[in-house]
Image (cartoon, rainbow, N blue to C red; front, side, top):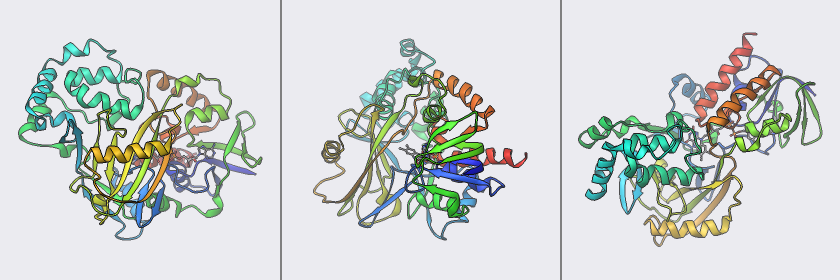
Length: 420
Ligand SMILES: Cc1cc2nc3c(=O)[nH]c(=O)nc-3n(C[C@H](O)[C@H](O)[C@H](O)COP(=O)(O)OP(=O)(O)OC[C@H]3O[C@@H](n4cnc5c(N)ncnc54)[C@H](O)[C@@H]3O)c2cc1C
């Protein structure tokens, strides 16, 4: 086989590239049996679940309009976000650092005092690290009550390993003035105040992109196992070879380096896994909340979301997320039993009956952005680009981003080819 643009992966990034390239001479190879990557949706017993909660805050109206024009009318709901944190049995609003005044008085004083004298705590940590940034900006108590344990549960690593800017724009920054002002004039709204979600799940955004791509341009169940950079030939799991002029890969960057036999230290690209449980119950649970963050290590999960409160449905429908290190192998049965016990402990489940469930391990889920990963990514993605291989997407770009970012990036790459 031969194609001008060979695309690895039929997730948001690969399909977005296929939408915006001005050419019919392309082929998308997807190793899975279905399109969507991590943006898939499952329906079971009347519940609609994603591979973990996927909610959307579009910043480019043209991208949102492009997707909506390719979706059924009335498919998308827009919701004013209600997100909470449970610490020591208090429910407080997210983000924690802007709502310390909602804590019991002693904890509030600790947080405020340490915030004011934050420079003292910051000296104990590497200022270039994510952990150092937390202590430097928020002081010891805010860091230790929420920011550090929550992110340790999520990233499943020592936060001193991560780059100061590991979460980019997804970290809700607030300075002393914002925090104090928020005590009188709440402005939690500034961080993604509302979001959209399709009634039939996040896959509807994927389907919108797929609607522009003919079926014969997407080969499912066929992955790339080897890339010969010199000859520009890829070999597939079915033993076929595909000659290409350009290769656009949305496979995880560390995997692309292996496929292309580019020497690198595998330890440079560390990441976590997320085990996501979707749980459907016989009746409603807590209302007026869309998701809750759990920083305390006594709970196995770091976040629980309520699809029923987002879609206004009658039975409690949860996603529950647990973080693992890359080399951990989750015991799914044991984890589900523990999750159900922890949900009871947190007061979310009482005598509810579990009527349907689903689980998936997202591997990788959150990449660990470190100084070294940034440097090696810059250098090796540059080497690959000289060979006509372009790496895009959340994992291809070894970054933290949204599906909108994936579309913006894929569209920009296609636009560069369209000008050639
Ligand atoms: C827990 C979690 C929550 C998230 N929540 C949100 C959210 O609320 N809102 C939001 O906008 N984004 C969210 N995201 C991010 C979003 O999931 C990603 O940005 C998006 O799905 C990435 O799409 P992608 O196409 O770049 O990668 P992927 O979805 O990983 O797609 C890559 C595709 O390539 C295929 N592939 C890999 N290797 C090969 C190979 N060798 N040969 C062939 N095919 C291959 C894979 O099977 C996959 O289908 C979340 C992510 C996680 C982990």
